[in-house]
Length: 155
Image (cartoon, rainbow, N blue to C red; front, side):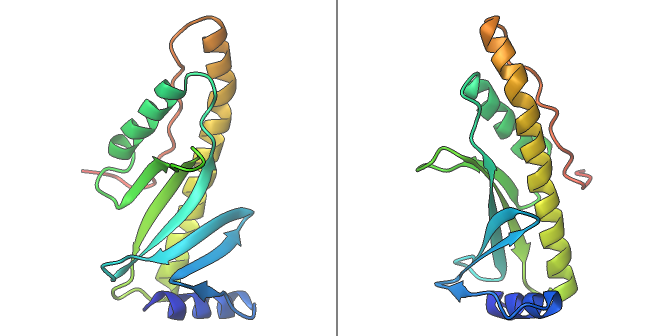
Protein backbone atom coordinates (compact mmCIF):
# COMPACT_ATOMS: atom_id res chain seq x y z
CA UNK A 1 0.00 0.00 0.00
CA UNK A 2 1.09 3.55 -0.65
CA UNK A 3 1.06 6.49 1.78
CA UNK A 4 -2.30 7.88 0.64
CA UNK A 5 -3.99 4.48 0.88
CA UNK A 6 -2.52 3.76 4.32
CA UNK A 7 -3.37 7.17 5.76
CA UNK A 8 -6.92 7.00 4.38
CA UNK A 9 -7.43 3.56 5.94
CA UNK A 10 -5.76 4.70 9.18
CA UNK A 11 -8.05 7.74 9.40
CA UNK A 12 -11.11 5.56 8.79
CA UNK A 13 -9.99 3.20 11.55
CA UNK A 14 -9.71 6.16 13.92
CA UNK A 15 -13.08 7.50 12.81
CA UNK A 16 -11.77 10.81 11.48
CA UNK A 17 -12.46 12.40 8.12
CA UNK A 18 -9.01 11.95 6.70
CA UNK A 19 -5.37 12.82 6.87
CA UNK A 20 -4.01 15.23 4.32
CA UNK A 21 -1.10 14.09 2.19
CA UNK A 22 0.58 17.03 0.50
CA UNK A 23 3.67 16.65 -1.68
CA UNK A 24 4.18 13.11 -0.37
CA UNK A 25 4.08 14.19 3.30
CA UNK A 26 1.46 13.39 5.93
CA UNK A 27 1.71 15.39 9.16
CA UNK A 28 -0.20 14.06 12.17
CA UNK A 29 -0.07 13.86 15.94
CA UNK A 30 -0.27 10.66 17.96
CA UNK A 31 -0.29 10.71 21.78
CA UNK A 32 0.75 14.36 21.70
CA UNK A 33 3.75 13.65 19.46
CA UNK A 34 3.79 15.52 16.14
CA UNK A 35 5.23 13.39 13.38
CA UNK A 36 5.62 13.33 9.65
CA UNK A 37 5.35 10.38 7.36
CA UNK A 38 6.93 10.70 3.93
CA UNK A 39 7.32 8.42 0.97
CA UNK A 40 10.90 7.43 0.29
CA UNK A 41 12.34 8.46 -3.06
CA UNK A 42 13.03 4.85 -4.04
CA UNK A 43 9.50 3.78 -3.09
CA UNK A 44 8.53 0.64 -1.25
CA UNK A 45 8.83 2.32 2.14
CA UNK A 46 7.68 5.24 4.25
CA UNK A 47 9.82 7.29 6.61
CA UNK A 48 8.32 8.37 9.95
CA UNK A 49 10.10 11.30 11.61
CA UNK A 50 9.52 12.92 15.00
CA UNK A 51 11.43 15.40 17.12
CA UNK A 52 12.85 13.94 20.33
CA UNK A 53 13.98 17.33 21.62
CA UNK A 54 16.88 19.73 21.74
CA UNK A 55 20.22 18.42 22.95
CA UNK A 56 21.20 19.57 26.42
CA UNK A 57 23.26 22.79 26.48
CA UNK A 58 25.79 21.12 28.79
CA UNK A 59 27.88 18.18 27.63
CA UNK A 60 26.34 18.40 24.16
CA UNK A 61 29.23 16.66 22.45
CA UNK A 62 29.07 13.74 24.89
CA UNK A 63 25.31 13.58 24.40
CA UNK A 64 25.65 13.44 20.61
CA UNK A 65 28.30 10.72 20.99
CA UNK A 66 25.75 8.71 22.99
CA UNK A 67 23.20 9.14 20.22
CA UNK A 68 25.67 7.94 17.61
CA UNK A 69 26.42 4.94 19.78
CA UNK A 70 22.69 4.25 20.06
CA UNK A 71 22.42 4.06 16.28
CA UNK A 72 24.66 1.00 16.31
CA UNK A 73 24.09 -0.47 19.78
CA UNK A 74 20.33 0.01 20.09
CA UNK A 75 19.09 -0.05 16.52
CA UNK A 76 21.70 -2.02 14.64
CA UNK A 77 20.62 -2.60 11.03
CA UNK A 78 16.92 -2.04 11.74
CA UNK A 79 16.15 0.94 9.46
CA UNK A 80 15.99 3.31 12.42
CA UNK A 81 18.23 6.23 13.24
CA UNK A 82 18.65 9.17 15.55
CA UNK A 83 19.87 12.37 13.99
CA UNK A 84 20.16 16.10 14.44
CA UNK A 85 18.23 18.59 12.33
CA UNK A 86 20.57 21.02 10.62
CA UNK A 87 18.29 24.05 10.89
CA UNK A 88 17.09 23.71 14.51
CA UNK A 89 19.68 21.45 16.12
CA UNK A 90 16.91 19.24 17.50
CA UNK A 91 17.35 15.50 17.82
CA UNK A 92 14.99 13.42 15.67
CA UNK A 93 14.12 9.77 15.41
CA UNK A 94 13.51 8.37 11.94
CA UNK A 95 11.92 5.01 11.32
CA UNK A 96 11.64 3.31 7.93
CA UNK A 97 8.37 1.43 7.41
CA UNK A 98 8.42 -1.00 4.48
CA UNK A 99 5.18 -0.84 2.50
CA UNK A 100 5.50 -3.96 0.38
CA UNK A 101 2.92 -6.44 1.61
CA UNK A 102 1.98 -4.16 4.54
CA UNK A 103 -1.67 -3.93 5.42
CA UNK A 104 -3.35 -1.49 7.81
CA UNK A 105 -2.74 -3.56 10.96
CA UNK A 106 0.98 -3.81 10.23
CA UNK A 107 1.15 -0.08 9.53
CA UNK A 108 -0.64 0.68 12.81
CA UNK A 109 1.75 -1.61 14.72
CA UNK A 110 4.77 0.16 13.18
CA UNK A 111 3.37 3.59 14.09
CA UNK A 112 2.68 2.47 17.65
CA UNK A 113 6.21 1.10 18.01
CA UNK A 114 7.62 4.32 16.54
CA UNK A 115 5.67 6.55 18.93
CA UNK A 116 6.71 4.36 21.88
CA UNK A 117 10.37 4.76 20.89
CA UNK A 118 9.99 8.54 20.60
CA UNK A 119 8.46 8.61 24.09
CA UNK A 120 11.32 6.52 25.48
CA UNK A 121 13.95 8.75 23.88
CA UNK A 122 12.21 11.88 25.18
CA UNK A 123 12.29 10.43 28.69
CA UNK A 124 15.96 9.44 28.32
CA UNK A 125 16.79 12.98 27.18
CA UNK A 126 14.77 14.50 30.03
CA UNK A 127 16.63 12.33 32.55
CA UNK A 128 20.02 13.13 30.98
CA UNK A 129 19.64 16.92 31.28
CA UNK A 130 19.90 17.32 35.09
CA UNK A 131 22.78 14.85 35.31
CA UNK A 132 24.61 16.67 32.50
CA UNK A 133 24.12 20.01 34.28
CA UNK A 134 25.58 18.58 37.49
CA UNK A 135 28.51 17.01 35.64
CA UNK A 136 29.23 20.30 33.85
CA UNK A 137 29.15 22.22 37.15
CA UNK A 138 31.71 19.79 38.59
CA UNK A 139 33.69 19.64 35.33
CA UNK A 140 33.18 15.87 35.15
CA UNK A 141 32.41 13.43 32.36
CA UNK A 142 28.85 13.29 31.09
CA UNK A 143 26.69 10.64 32.74
CA UNK A 144 25.42 7.48 31.12
CA UNK A 145 22.14 8.12 29.38
CA UNK A 146 20.20 4.95 30.04
CA UNK A 147 19.49 4.26 26.39
CA UNK A 148 16.04 2.90 25.63
CA UNK A 149 15.71 -0.63 24.35
CA UNK A 150 14.78 -0.98 20.72
CA UNK A 151 12.24 -3.64 21.57
CA UNK A 152 14.02 -5.95 19.17
CA UNK A 153 16.89 -8.36 19.52
CA UNK A 154 19.81 -7.80 17.18
CA UNK A 155 21.96 -10.79 16.32
